Image (tube, rainbow, N blue to C red; front, top):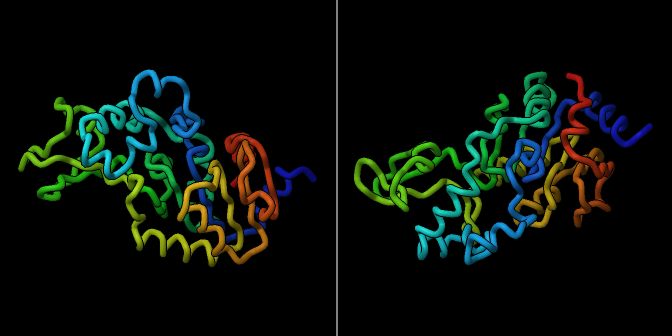
Length: 241
């Protein structure tokens, strides 16, 4: 039995599956993983992405933050791929209980997933720092000024995205711990498991069906009950619900 066949068998036998995913889930939708930095960033920006996407940089250099954010983080034409779709189908069939994601693109919801825990927030929620009014991602993308401003009070708008130096939402973390600790199968896919506290969440899994699907190695590979080094679409495309 191949690893993929073993995986499909596990999915069949499980009815309390939790999926925990990172950037690799969305790369097949054309959303770049900014960690695999190409020369482009260095030609165009004076700072590395991790610096630009930090709280202190946002406060100090808001214009430069938004130049990068609009250009690289708002991929609003992206569509869900086969992995997003299969996860939504597994949930609709009652087998998958939650998707926990490090992504901020909203593609899981677009594919039809209902229980999505967004550890790092979402580009689709933005709010005025002065009056709290909410705005959609399109407003940010299409705003003409260098910094998008509230159309009611003129305050500056901040994306509901967890920047470097900011803490994760406590309730979202607690919910993630709850779902993972109760899962009979935990599928971890498309994440390098290098960013904490998110990477530490798999410590709460108590079962014996921990599946890691990632193209490259991760620090957690030795802990997996099943390791598949392949693209997610290739593996999820074989699931029949």
